[in-house]
Length: 249
Image (cartoon, rainbow, N blue to C red):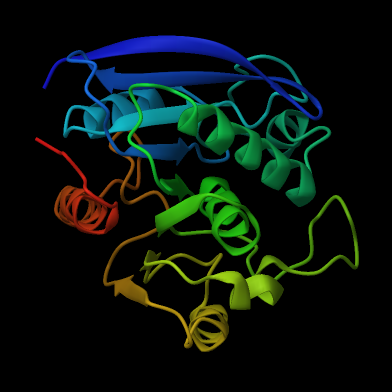
């Protein structure tokens, strides 16, 4: 399905956040999904993923969550600690949550977005932001988290603050989580803690055998040519099933 690209400078509490949105060209109201980039920023690969999801019949908004440090900043895969930390200047979990609430309000005000909850998905850092949104935000529906980081840890920018998983009781919508077996950022103990905290909710989680962090990102050197596409097919089917009245291709 052909799509159009729109770039918006969205006012948020802490400045402006660039949002790249892809929507089917027919203009018909479609279910919306927020797609959140990984720790390397809103790079071309992430925009390709967002556009590919939109081609399935969704409106897909990809925000630049590193907007505090500059506009559309990215770091190479395998970046040094210094390069990665430079992108994170000024960001906090609370700031991410505020940004997502602003973005969901913006999407729900658009004529080409179907009324109702907005889906959300993200990779790595984006998985954590997705969790913050669905557990504490307003207007969010089903979510897909790819190898979310720091769910069981305090905000690095706010030592001693609650960990995202502490708000797990706020998760009430359908959630799908992919944990790569070889990902050192979510060892078995972390996965067990997350699953226990979400036992009350309609959450499905998978440990992807033989896969590593980045397995679902096509241009990451850890991309898994079998498990990556399989997880993506599951993601598309998940959103088609759980976003209300989804009019997908």
